[in-house]
Image (tube, rainbow, N blue to C red; front, side, top):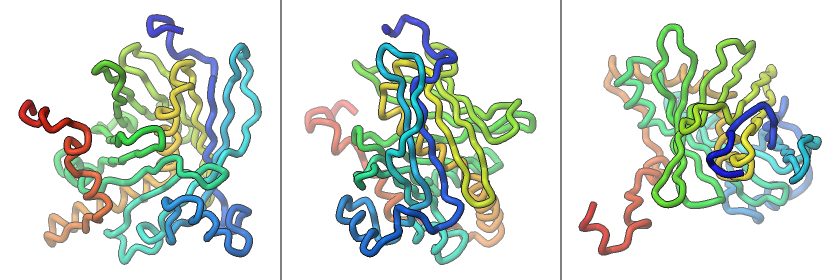
Length: 284
């Protein structure tokens, strides 16, 4: 398939399921020294990591058009020290990591608190922001919520760099006719839906399924991993938005802002030191 051929469509080429556990007792953590084993598999599995669910995948094989059954491919963890064990509500920060079945790190999604407050102050209402990192490369992808009017749905945007100085832009938009918190992903260059996220909330857990409906993007692990990570944030976003709203009011009334974690600040480091040659600095 070339870039000039039809993009998107109804066929689901890849499916990724993020199934959050209903309780904190589950097979991935049961057993003596299991946590230590995961930590030995990857330094990304920190001491405060709490396994919150499993991830499963299914991909259409070449020459076929039928999606096989989902197969478990890994698990996800929530950094408890930054969420449930945070000193106070205003100190909370959403950080979730994805791992393979063998314990290898796949990706991380982190809430960008300072970015959220800046956008929210400018827009006059809570706006969410996330940074996503994956094993595919060293590029950080930022997903930012855009302004929502009184009759509009939630809208987020992000872009991916491409070859030869190109890039692609994507919009994650809430479905108006949806009974739940479902989203569609639109590719700007072809103005077509290339993926969707189906949300099924439970009392505590829930399942969030990403369906890739574009043959080219189904083979792009970077793109798939970004949507996979974002789908988990859907489960927590209402709590994030409420905390952000309270924080804005508190800052205006008492001049007290939330702390900025050093890990968040590290994501703002000058990337040109890592990506540009010394002689290029005179040109920027």
